[in-house]
Amino acid sequence: MDKLKREDEVLRKIVPGATITMIQVKDDYTEEVGGKYINGLSFNVWDHRFNTISAAIASTPWLAEIPIDRHIWKAIGVFNTKDGTLYLITSYANFIAVQRKIKKGKYSHYMYPLTINNATSTEQLSLDGFENDDTIAEKRLKEAKKILGDDFTRLKRTIIITYDYFEDAAVNGLEILVDNNFSIIDRLAIPEYESPSPDDDTIKHDNQEKSAEKQKSDRIVKWNANKIRRPITGEENNNGTSN
Image 1 (cartoon, rainbow, N blue to C red):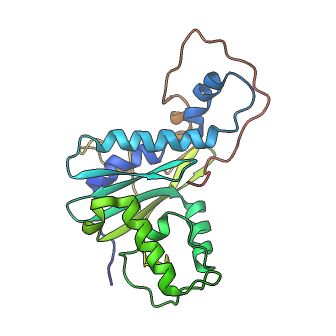
Image 2 (image 1 turned 180 degrees about the horizontal axis):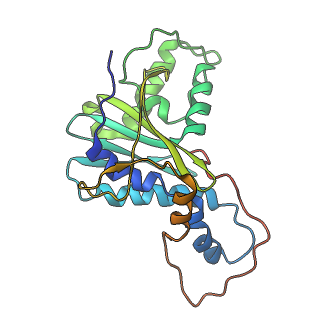
C-alpha cells in the first residue's frame, strides 16, 4: 500500500501560506472595502493563502503552480515535478464535507478528478443519477486533464493538506493520502515552521493562545495609510470557508 513520507522541503513552501488566518487579513480588508459589510472576507483569506503559496513556490524550479479555475473562485495546486506528487490545500472541515459528498455519489468538487491516479479503491462507486461508472470515470479523466494540462502525464498521486482554523489560529495540520474514491489511506501530522527557512527547526503550537497573539500583529497586506477606517458593526466568523 502506498504510504506517506513527509517531504519537508515542499511543506516549507506551503505551510506559511496555508496557516494564514482571518485575523491577519481582516483589518486591511475592512479598510479596503470601506464599510461594515465584509461578506467576502473568508474568500479574501483564501486568496491570501493561495497567493502566498504561489509566491513561495515561484523560486523553486521543480515545483509548479497548478491554477484551478472554478469560475466564481480559484484555488491552487502545488505539483512536485520530481516525484509526480500534487498537493491540494483546504480546511479539514471542507475535506470531510467533500468526502461525504463523494461517498454519496456527488463528484462535482475539483479534488475528486485530481485524485484519479491514487491507489485503487476496493469500494464501488455510487451511481450519480442515471450515469454509470464508465461515464463517471470518463468525465473524471477529462476534468483532471483539463486542470493539469501536460502535467497530467506526470501525475503519480495527490496529497491533500488540511488545517483546522480555530479561534484565529491554524491548528491540527495534516497531510492526507486518499485512495481514488477519497477514502483515507494514510495521514501525517504537519509540524509548524517559524519561517520557511530550511534551517528552521520544526515546532508545534503547544500554546495556541500565544500563537494567535503573535499572528494578530503580523499583518499580511498594507493598504493606504491615509485611508479613514469606518466603524464596524458586523463581522464574519467562518475562518475555514470551503475552497
